[in-house]
Image 1: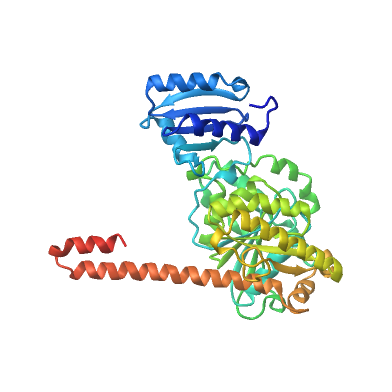
Image 2 (image 1 turned 180 degrees about the horizontal axis):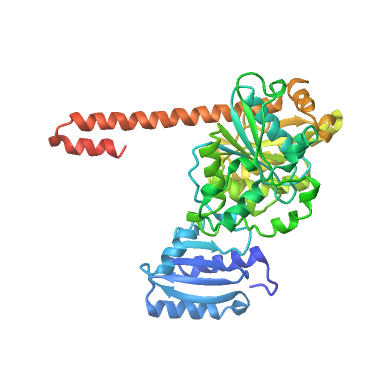
Length: 450
């Protein structure tokens, strides 16, 4: 073992030791919140355990990285806890690893909350990439098709969704929002929620010049009221909210989505998430999102973010799409930025995402690593009028916001078709069960297991 503690190297060395000394044994390696390790051997004979424990403790630097070595039984509670949270070390089916976390825990929650309405998240690793603008304009494209979309500002540390509409109607800045709703839920101790009137927390955008004439609309739920008299208490409000998922069966953010579904009945819910790695992003991704649009720019900082986020999404089979924003105006800069983005995303996806036998060409525009391009436009720098929103959708060449809207529509239709197929299968099965004689029960069981 090396003298110097290294976060990744120590783990690698311990696993290497276990591979050679613990062959055939079921072993759990756990790194705790202090980055120290415990080793648990399952169903091991006492004499064998004492021998291997002595071998480990004889390692020169064992005491510097190791807290505990223990023998456990597969019937024990600790075994069930470990097997539930552990990942198998590749190539070694009996060695498992568990990482304990003290923060950012929402990024390690894998239990989806069943929400009937499709929830679409818009995320960026860095700020200033036009994420909120793209979310609004994609929603406008869907509203022009007659859809009702709820847009929620979950960028609680830096709210901005309402301000895009507030310059034309200052009343929009006075509406309460996500933060106020969650405080009310907490203050009510999640009881008497019928007393919380959702109408106090949103405003509607249905101007036909922007939305069209097919009956669609945008419903905006801001982060909080941002008019001057209320802004002074914002930090105090924010300090009362902990967005971490502690109790999955009674998570207070769930009440917001329940209210939205019951009272507003939207076709889609769009979430504007916080930049970077934070608990709001983890919550949006792993608890609610059916689909995620990831906004990055072709530079080293953003590609580090892409490399950080993609493995988490891929391992949990979350649908996501890359967006390159904003693509520079000047042709030379545009080529340099786009080339860098595509080369890096291709490398990342080839290493972490694509199966070895299904790696596409780097310039395959249909491949997962190839982004939707949103060109830079000066109008978006000060997006404070509905007419500006309208011009971004209707002006110029190919409309990237319509591309995003089309992806959402197609994915939603495919999911509905799949659900219809599943329903049809159940109906067919029920019909068979009604007509098949009991003497053919074995055949009936075969249908049930299909």
